[in-house]
Image (cartoon, rainbow, N blue to C red; front, side):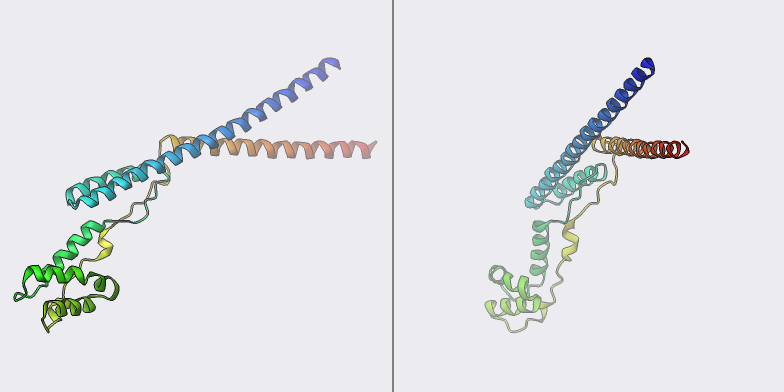
Length: 211
């Protein structure tokens, strides 16, 4: 009986050690997973900022290179949602080109450009008709139809947005899988322990009733 009691104590100790290791492992994997997911996001933010800087250069090739770099990283890593990144400089250049092409032939280029820039707030706030009227008044022309017919670029074409990978085989993805597996094992053992305790209590109750 003494030996049997000692064996039971050892088994209980082993169970508690296993439980402790599982809990420590779960906590460690949770911290590691959160760290690597955050690193993925920080790396994405860095590449997104590089794209914004590339846009300020006004060079399409530089912007395309930065955009491809960001796209490749986002496609291969979790937790890297970019949101909509505005390519404002490229859009402004395209809009300026469209406005210049709408200039009537009889209007002086320098005066027209000054008027177009001065009336840009009208374009942003009230649309092309208001802008055309403002420019026409400044340069001294009566017909605004040609100005108002300027074909402006579609703003939606000057936004970049990439969808991240749902799971990636990097440190973030691997630690996340291990975390889930560890949590499942811990849950199964907990349920098993509860079921075992209930069965043991039912057996004791049955023995007590039979006696």
